[in-house]
Length: 94
Image (cartoon, rainbow, N blue to C red):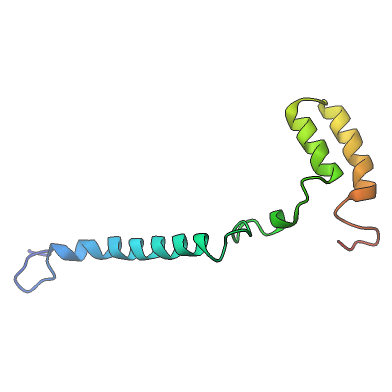
C-alpha cells in the first residue's frame, strides 16, 4: 500500500498543507495584534483597558504587592474603599 507515493497519489507534499494553514492563522493573529488589538489589550482583557492606575483601590493593591501592608490591613482597607470607590455603585449598577 503506497499512501504517499507519487504515482497516482498526492505525494509527501500533502503533509505540508497543515503547516501552511498554521502559518496563515499565525499571520492573521499577528497582524490583528499589531493593528486592531493594540492599545485595547486584546479581546481577552476587555475590562483591563479602563482601569485607572491612580485609583485608591489600585494604589492599595500596589502597596499590598510591594509588602508595605499585610493581608489583614489590605482586606480592612479594601472593604472601606469598596463602599466608596467600588466598581458596583449603590443600586446594583456599575
